[in-house]
Image (tube, rainbow, N blue to C red; front, side, top):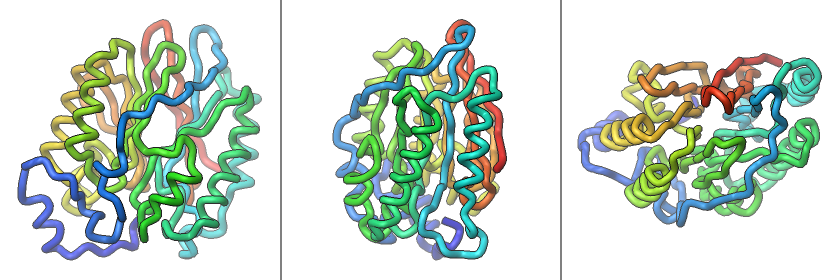
Length: 293
């Protein structure tokens, strides 16, 4: 993600209009199908079966796993240390994580099938540690789309789409395809229709932040259209969203957006960090802690 050098004229072109766009900054760099071609319908997938402790359950959150990156800042990988830390937390936390969420950029190059297979093996190990037959739910990132990588993502990575939802413990979980740094009109409208007809408290996830922070390269690390970002934040605030999870920036960033918080996840591959989110089904609230390995 941080290697990509973007011409200033491209940024200016894509940010100069507030009209809804479906291109996104990254479509310029051979991302294959557009977001509206990828999303199809909002897929409802089987939800996990979390373990409850005093009315609470928890789940693991990672982002930017980047299998296949060879740069010095990413190596050596510390997957075994991560597995050990996760095993320790399963034993020690009062509310240990039951299932996993990964927010994209699972691979580096997009067009290398082995990278996706390595990520799937990583997911299987994590799922075995989490136990209870639960899964790692993954949405798509920009690196996963590089060099027409969508075909491999769609074939290998559960739940085989970037736009999906499930229910767990009385909460609704929604995941958006922001791999092209744009929601697109079709996806936004389908998400809007779904959340407006769903009265449960919600947790939403995407690779690219809804807000992020403008301090990073003229909004390069958030949705590329200001109107899309504003509409998404307002929609979440109006429809009982308790937490928005995202990645892409590689560093921890927390935004208080009034009625909900956005947590931008640190890069697993560079900073060797992850989070455990705890959901209180009685108070309908969420909390989170970061861990290192």
